Image 1 (cartoon, one colour):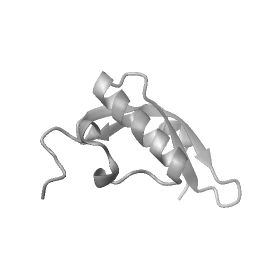
Image 2: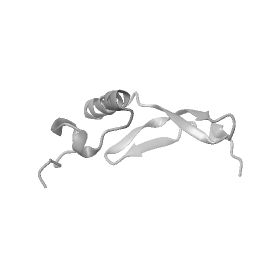
Image 3: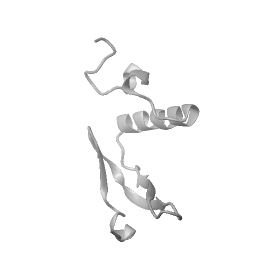
Image 4: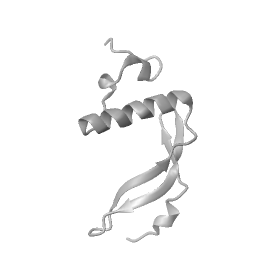
Length: 85
């Protein structure tokens, strides 16, 4: 089934703590036409969301994959969640 990718632009992206941005662009595999990446405008993140987002980006760049919740320092974890289990 084919769809217009332009319909994705502007769609809101949500995380567990609220909206984190909207789709700004779509990157497609030229061979399969499968959507590979969504480019998300995150310019309206709160300060806390920006700190967590920056940490995840840095971690993923350094390790080649995003962090798990256990990999994240306590200050970047969702409120009320700790390492104690």
